[in-house]
Image (cartoon, rainbow, N blue to C red; front, side, top):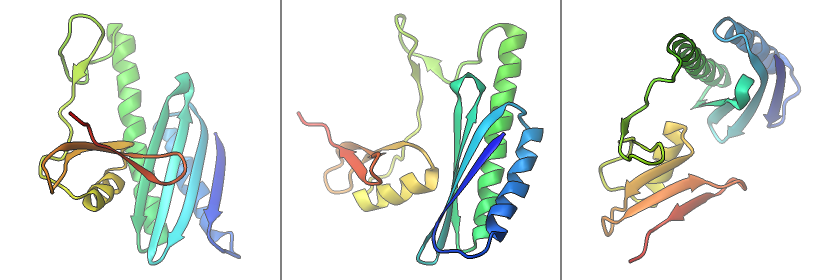
Length: 171
């Protein structure tokens, strides 16, 4: 596995990258076909943020993100999240090889294209600021929510430039 650690803060020591290398070395026990692992370490005020992207065989990408007030605790949390995802993916592969098909993720709702119903959104109305916090906390790429001011549905997503996008449907 190739490891790329990027520190986005001023640091004279290589103790943190060594700690990351030691911790992610254990991930190969859970899934041995990790091609590359990118780790981004950031400091934003009192928060210490760690983002991990693992590139696996079959073009599968797994992501983990954690932020705490301690960089080492953030690294530990992100590695734990990555480990859980790798174990889940390995189990899916094992089941698909054994049965010949992948287990369904939800209920099928159409007879044409393979579309499955996934009930995964925040039910209480949120302001866009609260939706950003919820999106960051969940570690997902987007969040579907109802706006607090008019109870209309909206979608919040990460843009490529570090900003957020908000999609509000019109009638």
